[in-house]
Length: 422
Image 1: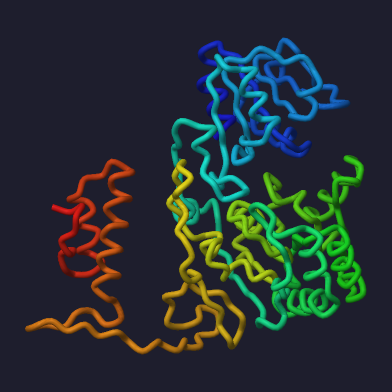
Image 2: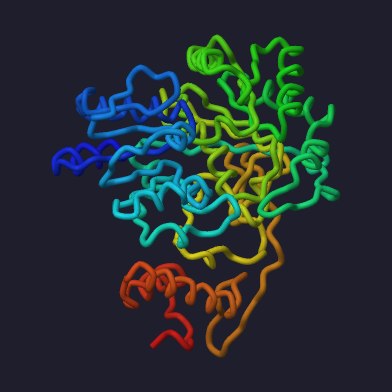
């Protein structure tokens, strides 16, 4: 999408553009995407340490922000930031001040900051180009199968402190890097996903190295990658996982964003988090469609059933810019099948993997003269849902008639009269 905008808007209008990313691999991705969209190579310059493709006079500059911060800034009419949920960082806000007259465009699949706040402090408007459901329906993404483990095989986070938006790193590392937990990761992978190339997201470098060690002991070709690995070695390891020379690659977070390896069709979540953005970025790394292979996510962190993370990566979320978008508390939108470990939507009556039926809670009956109201849903719950539908309609500038149609289709009756309905 960024390449399309730059070709069709920037080049055709004779504008100058700067694309800013935060990782070496992302620079390469954007360069290749621009070429695929028929942008001439002489129109593209690269701003990155030790890269021979530097062209100061090129119309489009693709820059690593670390290198850009140390060099003279190129002129730009349009500044594009990829993974723009990071735009609240000091380095990106400094960049925006340097280009006050430019038009700023951010692109991200998770428009929420790592501390779970919205992006209203850094952007004026947001356009949702497609939902996850749309991308699955159109064939760009594939719905994954998701499995977790019994509670006793999840890390005990009772004594792990919370700092800011997430768990404290050292405490989290101690809680996760346990021999039994690491052994469980390998055992479940062999049973469920051995035929799939896999990326593991660990809680620390030591945790990642321990996981790789146990995979190797089981005869699995596995490797660890982190920031200390040289760019050449990192490129080799990523090429090996793509070609199948490696079966498993493990890291902390270096591959969580903008790393697209189509044959990688399994994600192991071994790092508990409270950041919805990090949860979605990591768990969705395997969802790009490839050769009709169904992706598998193995959740050894308990993230899928953590209420604040709002469930599965394929769950459509109502993204908004404001900081008050998040629901407070509540129950997890997912549940685990006790028979096979499959993670299912909270409202599912049976497991999609093993067909085991879930226990149904005792229904709440509400009686009114002359008729019965739907079993299991209280009047208060329906009123709350009507308010939610109205709020969504107002935000998207849909009519109240649209909201009424949605509610009636869902419940088979008109909504209760409330302070906001007519």
